[in-house]
Image 1 (cartoon, one colour):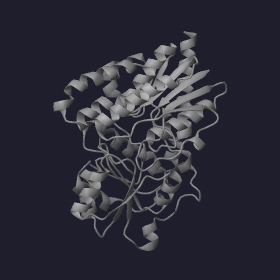
Image 2: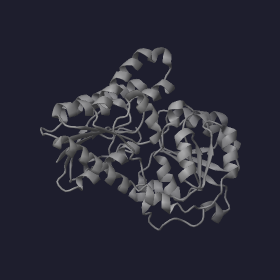
Image 3: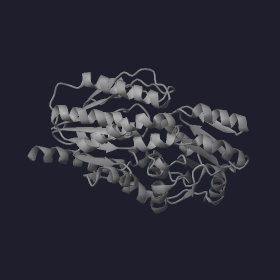
Image 4: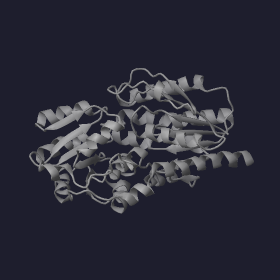
Length: 395
């Protein structure tokens, strides 16, 4: 069976999409009889992280990479990059017939590319939807100039959704949006999960937090993207000032709002340490020296549906989590992740209160880690993809 997997991001790029696509590719090719081609890009997520992918690409399947223009921030930059990906991918597709085309997509272009190639190969399309692009741009970008583009994006979203044989939604919070727009299609819910690096931490979990051993103030760490979706510039500078002398903050990552976050911290006199994006092997060492892990989503309607992939990584470490999330993510945390203090996004006083209530202790989340093992989730997702191909061929 021949499978074509499309992902804009792929290791050694950093980020949720990259990690998910790599885990899915490794799982698919482990199924006897499956031959896999991956079409992706050269690493481009961050200016500050440009690893050479050649030595890391698997020999078990083919990885074809599109070279993108210099990444520019904002919606225009995203459209330009994804358009280049779609055009480049068209010329890279191997001359083979595929039994199923899989597109894992947080924005529309990868899903649209999947729909086009699935039609070209007369193969079923399996969508793995990681975000709702149309709703997100409604919230993030000003509507006075977006209205004409909004109609185009609506049509672009409808095309792959109507073409898909099956659609996986990474967050169950997405279901009302897609059901209202496209009815009761064949939806699945294979979420993000805990990667092997965090399931089998070398040396195991610490039994005490670093601050309990040293007597220092708690070290609060955020690691991940710094963009509109995270809204760190709306919370972190003021929070760091309010907790001055009671906590110290480190931010690891990059993104379109990093410069604004740094500027606000400087203007407000907030003591926040900034580090460039790190490979996971180094990031785990930073996590070990953290006392509290910080998570935040912007206070916009679109982000009340999402389930941050970072949450699974944080939970596996056993450290207390300070999380500014609402909607589905807040419900998920209350039900599944003990040792987490929640506050409303962008609410500085609420964050201070949550920090005051946060138990500073290591938490045993072994049951969560087992339940949300990325390996097990990807095995079920891969089996569903193969079943989609088999159902199409038998039908």
